[in-house]
Length: 365
Image 1 (cartoon, rainbow, N blue to C red):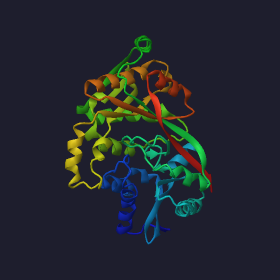
Image 2 (tube, one colour):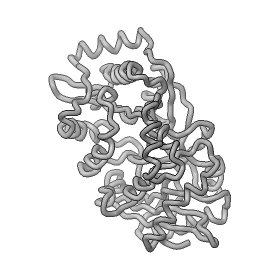
Image 3 (cartoon, one colour):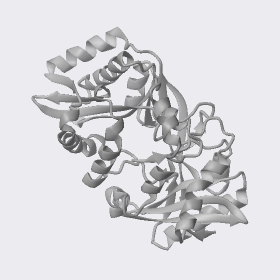
Image 4 (cartoon, rainbow, N blue to C red):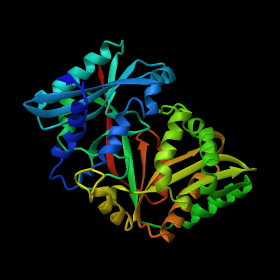
């Protein structure tokens, strides 16, 4: 076990999954340049309120990796002393896994933290959770994927389940008519109107999202408010792939009270580029991107006082209706916390079925 100390080490850290997952029909290779930017302490605004150490396990060749993460924003928001682990990868070898977790735990404990939680790469605003059910289908954009033996490695290393996160799928483009009528009556009564994203005024739209985002999720388990810099950074990354009809705002008297956002599932295109290198892979990616028929509904949030207004159902309906007209035939929604019965009930009433489960683990330090 050793920390990443050089550019060559960082290259090895980034490269490991491309070797480990060779032969896995469902793994989607990210662009290496995107992983490098995510890990960059200079480019990623996450590091304005956090620090992290990257570790490699070596037995001749590199056989494992992990990141230890001290997210000060999380602990301030939740009045907590939790550290995180992320970017965990290794073969089916308990000795290697134990060494990786021990290295991360030692780094976190030295900073006064009392528990280790994960995986989160880097936080719940990024990829998080370990896949424990649903190994037979590929992950969607910004979703994790791992071999079936990972939960065993983690649990034998002393971790226990903290929360499960559910992911849902649907191929049904219509909502139950009774539900749709009821939602429309409620929104009309409250004078709520829907509109799509105005891409010509993208910066202003991002500012409106900022005003709603952190308030809409409040202190849900695991939620960490995003800073203005983080939202700006994410918006800049996603703007080239945003489809205006798939981002919808709910407004009352001209004020945004909620929004929902879906993106084309770019993993469909990324899967055509197994090396993860931009050149010559970009040609394959762009060609495959023309035929994407899947979307992921990433976010849906409403201010607390409007959660029974019917606007959530109508925003889902908007995305499905507009998406279907654009040629999308499959949608994923989530993740949703296992102990959020209101959201689970709502999403299942809309016709979605649970098809994957992600798990977040805790271990005392």
